[in-house]
Image 1 (cartoon, rainbow, N blue to C red):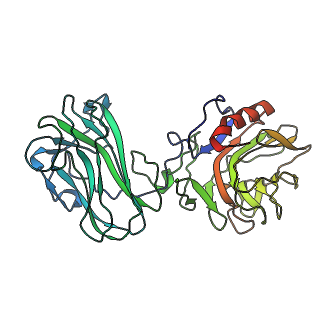
Image 2: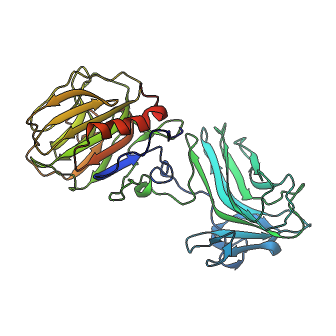
Image 3: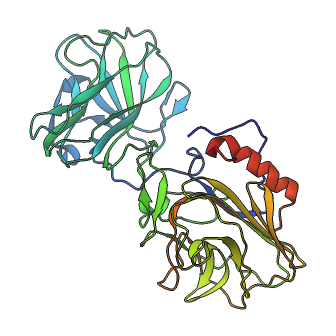
Length: 403
């Protein structure tokens, strides 16, 4: 989903929490996953027994894993990088990798950075390959997309869904065994990673974990995505049953006189229900404040110590930009797609100290989990002005096809 850049910068002043699943560089790293490509060897010449790699290596005289500190194409190899070097030659096939059990009904994605030494001839050459020799699972490879040399490039190969299961070879394969790279020079592979998921996924050049799967743009929290679902575009979806994000923190507590703005871009799939939770600041069965859809009709509101029911009901299966602001005097304003939908005076916070920030869920069985998308979630320690709300709405308008 492309980000629209025609309407200026999103307001960030005063933000204390924010995530944007479309910001793949700064925020969203995709579903937590395990790298099933086993890294091979140590600095210097490798051998077939190193690090439990069980797929034979061919062309071993030209295969080296490089140590960190060396620089190629303006990039210096870091201690946590895994960089393989193949010295190219005219004899034999060059490849290495491992075998893996291919699950049925999954997408397989192979990703890495590569660098070809300056002046090397690039023909119609393989870079990596899945070799189907059992179970009719999958097979295919990725070739050099262009003839550039002396620069780092990123390449991905996604195959699937797999039609069966079985033993599968996956390997780096510079030049294949036919048309190949030139007979002199070398190629580097940096941080190869392979994953199997139920959908195609945006890829990052790092090993990911549950705790590092979603990074807030302000960098003050760790967001665990192990209890949410993902659609075919690898976007977060809340299933309305048990999906939710829970962040153990007390930093978003508010007391009377504290201003706040809660902002989100959502696509609801259900209106009826008991208090569908969008963003909640809670402690056990109590809450400090709660942005939610109201019982039965699905109207949007920010709930504090009293219930302020709005009349605004979002359209199902359409994105909407929601902003709720409370200033230092307790003046509450609800916006939808940049327009004021409700104003209330004397808004107050619930009198308790929260310990969790919850997105899409209350954290226990008291209210219903949210059903739909919550692609953007933000909290500010001040009340955004109407012009700032409009600025943010305009920024997201094209991207989410807002009215």
